[in-house]
Structures are given as C-alpha cells and as structure tokens.
Length: 213
Image 1 (tube, rainbow, N blue to C red):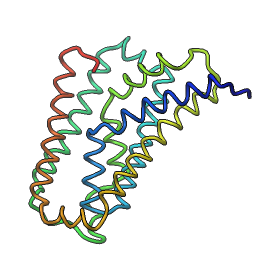
Image 2: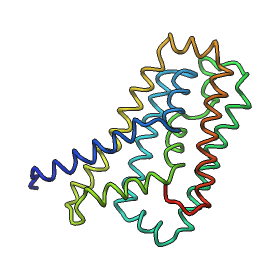
Image 3: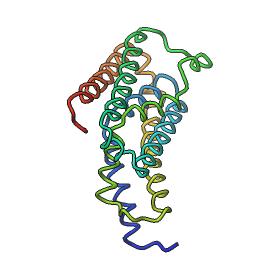
C-alpha cells in the first residue's frame, strides 16, 4: 500500500471540514449535554459513542452510494426526513412532559433508556448527514480511491464525532453544572425540548418543500 502526500491531504481536508460541522450546535449537542448533566458523565460518553457509530453508518452508506439513491428516489429521502423529524419531536415532547419530574438517581436512571441507543438514534434521525457527506466526498475525495482510503475516511469522521461529544459530556458532566441543572431542571428541560422540537419541525417542513438542506 502506497500512501502519497495528496492522499493525506484528502484525509486531513475532509477531517477538518467535518469537524467544523460537528462542533456546530444541533440535536446531538443538546442530547449529549442534557444526558451528561441529568444522568452522569459516563452516560454522556455513551451518547457520544452512539453518535459516533451513527456517523460511521451514514458515512459508510454515503460512500456506498446512498446519496445517489436518494437522488434517484426522492421519496425515500422524504420518508427518512419524516422519520427523523418524528423522533426529534418525540424527544421534545418527552422532555416537556417530564420536565417537572425529579431526577432519577443511581440504578433508577437505567429506566430512562439506553444512552448509547439514544445517541445512535439521534444521529440516524438526520438523513441530511448523508447529503453533507455526499457533498464533501464528491468535492474532496477522488472517485477512484483505494479501499484503505474509504476505511480511513469513515474512521476519521466517526472519531471526530466521538472526540467532540466526549468533550461535551466531560464538560457538562461535572458536579458544578449538574448542581445547576438540578436546581433549574424544569426550565432547562423545557428550553432543550423547545429547541429539539423546533429542529424537528424544521426537518418536517423541509421534507415537503423539496429542499435537500
């Protein structure tokens, strides 16, 4: 296997562009932050791992031609966006409904759901990730590429996701921020739920207006 400087430049360029997109606040940030402060830093890290796995799935699907399939079958993209919108709205409604509930402690937290699965579903709920990957891969990645490059690209974007959201979970999982959350849980959950709901509505509207972004 021969690795050239141009190959490394491709990997670095994709990694930087995707990382800049990752750090932009969105549903993934809100879910990670809320999990870390409401449950524990460890659960926040599990969400980060789930988000990373979701990114690996979308990136692999894009490199395998899923974006082209969406272009060929626009209705499939609409269905995916509808599913993602409904999931975000479900999260938002759940936060509003239980905003005034006391925080479950110790083993009782397990009843709140698997944080890894929540992270995975949050990432998979956004099919626009495929469009994003399709755009940067077409612009930056050679069509004729070795298998190792495809594997490296998938690993890089997945690692970016895990590293960033692990940092978010670590920052918001500290005792000080958790104390702030416990004192203002109802308000924080309602604000978080509102933002998730707005993102879900935006995705829902976007499913019917013909836009790809």
